[in-house]
Structures are given as C-alpha cells and as structure tokens.
Amino acid sequence: METLKIIERAESLINFGNEIEKTRWNRVVGRSTYTYVDNGRMAGFRSSCLSFIKLIYGTRHPHFIEFEKTTNNHYLANLAAGVGIMIAIKEEIAGGWLTTYKSLVASEIFSDFIEMAEHLLDQGYKDPAAVVLGSVLEEHIRQLCIKSKVEIKAEVKGKMLPRKADTMNADLVKAGVYNLLDQKSVSSWLDLRNKAAHGNYTEYSKEQVNLMLQGILDFMKRNNI
Image 1 (cartoon, rainbow, N blue to C red):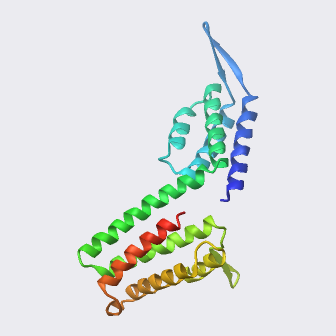
Image 2 (tube, rainbow, N blue to C red):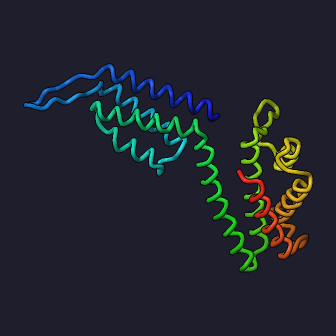
Image 3 (cartoon, rainbow, N blue to C red):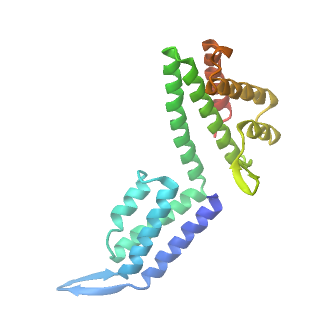
C-alpha cells in the first residue's frame, strides 16, 4: 500500500470511530452511570482497525497489542482508546515513521541472513553461502527500488511480474541511486549467485564468495534503505 493510501485508510477508520461516538447511551446502575456505544458498530470498527494494524505493523507491534487489549468492550472509553491509537498511527505514518520502521525490520532480517552466510563460509560451505548472499542482495535491490520509486514489476503478456534483479540494478543507476561501478559489482555478485544456484561450483572460489560478502556489506551500508 502506498503511504497516501494508508493515511487515507487510517483517516476513514478514525471518521468511522467518530461516527460511532454519536450512538452513545447511558445506563444507570445504582449511583453509577456507564456510557456505551452501539455494540455492533463497535465490533465492526474493532475488526477493521485490527485488520489494518496487522497489515501495516504485524501482530507483535505495540499498536496491535494495545488496540486489541483496550477495545474489547463497547464502553465509550473503549471507543475513545481505539480512536486515539488510530490517530497516533496516522501521525506516525504521516511523519515518515512507517518507512523507518520497515527499514529497521528489513535491516534486522538482512543481518540474520548475513550472519548465516558468514557461518556457512566459516564451515567451508561456499556454495549455499553464495546463494544466501545473492538473495539478500536481490531483496536489498528491490527495497532500494521501492524507496526510490523505481518499478519492481513489469507487464508481461497481460500479467504483472517481478522484474529481474539485473534490470532493477540498471534502473537504479539510471535513477541516480548509485553509480556504474556499483552496478558492475552488483552484476558480478548476481552472476556468482546464479553459478551457485545452478550447480556451477567450480567456476568460483571460497575467496571470491568472501569478497562478495564484504562487497555486499559495504554496498548495503552506502546504499541503505
């Protein structure tokens, strides 16, 4: 989802919550007064918001956990808590936090795979290490395209298909994201990955895979997402 569409969706859910507030009604029990909102509409609001938050942040994010915990009834206070969380989410996304958050998550995942490749190399398994490194590189290229608004899909015979890594690599150079020297390096790393993936194990050495590892780390550091 594009950021603008995400913000628009958050706004519509906030407006939905504000409309539900108009259904408020009171129940007096002894000396206490309890304020409720329409139960059915509250359930719909809760379900829609949880689906939205899950799509954007996942189920482990504090926003999802807090929303799920504080909107489990149809008191007015439950609705107010839900709307408040949705407003906070909208402001975060509008302020650019979503991009930062996703970058942090991606960086953590990449780090795990890089460590895996390092371990494989240390154990003498250059071939699976090359495949893992190539996968990390290709995903980083894809994320750079998304960040730089470079197309990651192309229409082929009426279907939108993922673009090849080499094509995205060339397009990122055209977009000024990095230079021709980086493009050549990326192409060579992708070629090494393809050799490993197709079983051409004698066409490269462990030392070349180690250089690939160091080169990719430097490339990702200089061209962060």
